[in-house]
Length: 112
Image (cartoon, rainbow, N blue to C red; front, side, top):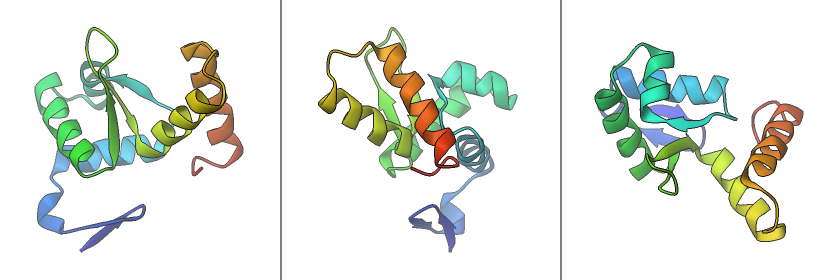
């Protein structure tokens, strides 16, 4: 068994691409991006990254937003902060919300 944040997963459930994505989000928790762009940063194809991101989303490690021409993904902790900001200040522009999330994550060392 492996522990990833608050999640406990069987080693057989984590393939190489998922592990790279989890590590990427742990190192860059403020990232909010498409599967294609995350794949470019990891040196992986869009298809394999998208498949892994979908599985990580089902597990509650990542979060998917469908509000763009292509879905965007983020680390679940970032998504929780964004949802809370949207509830508290619905009038804030999305870019301003992301900027606040980045500042909060930097302030807490990446673990809100």
